[in-house]
Length: 321
Image 1: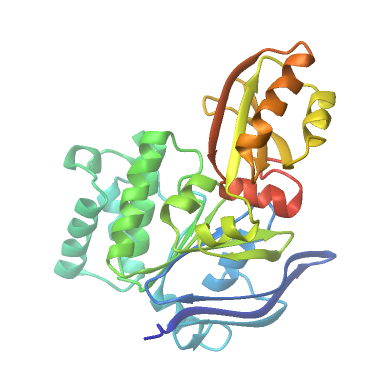
Image 2: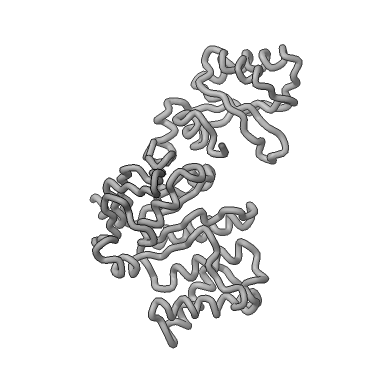
C-alpha cells in the first residue's frame, strides 16, 4: 500500500537578487520516512528547509506539509512541524527545564500537561537531573543539541526538520544524537535531515537527495545511488607524499574511473581514493605507479563506494571544496 506524503515540494525556486539558491526543485517525503538532503555548504539545503518551515517564502512553486499549503495555511503547517535549526536557539541563563517551559508556553501548553511533556522529553533525550538544573551556558554542544530537539518535540509534531543536527559535535555526541534520531524514526515521525556528512546520510536515511547549486542531481536510497554510478569499489591508498603529477598518472591507468584526494580517517594524513569496477585488476598497476615515483605506500584498503564517491563522480569535486 502506497504511503501518503507528509511533505510535497513542487517546482520551487528561491532567488536572492541575482543568486538562485533553490532552482525549480521538486521532492516528496512519505509519512514515516527519514529523508536526507545531502550536499556541500551553499547547495541550497538550509534554504529549502527554511521554506518548508515557513521562515522564507519561495519565489515560485508550492510547498505542502500534510494537506496544508505553507503559503495558504502557515499556522496549520506550524502545528505539524518541529524545527531543529543548525544554530542553537536556547537561553544561556536558563536551565534545560526552564527553556523547555518557555518554548512550551509559546506552543500553548501549560500546567500539568506541559510539566509531564517536559519530563517525557528530558528522559527521551537522556538529560540527567543534575544537568537539567544547570544553566545551558555550562552545557556541551551535544547537550545543547538534545535540548534543541526536545524543544522542537514539545507540541508532538508529525514532521521534523533537522538542519545539520550533529554539526561540530565529537564522535561520541554525534552517535548519541543518531540514536535519538533513530528512535524518532521508530515512532513513525517524518524527518527531513540536512547534512554534509556522508556517513550520517548512509547510516540514517531511507532516501537521499544529493543537492548541488540549488538542484537535485541524484535521488534514491543510499544503495540505489551507489548503483547509479555503476561502480561498487574504492581503493584507498595512503602514500607518504602526494603530488599533482602522481594523481594524473593514476588517472591514466586503464580501469580507473575517478581519483581524488581525501583526508585519512584520523585526518592527519591524506589518502588517494580510486573509484573502479575492477579493483583486483588495477591494484598492482596503482601500487607500481606510486612506487616508481619514489613514493612509499603506507597502506592500501579496498572498500565499497560511499555517497561521497557518488557525489564526486557526479560533480567532479569533493563535498569539502
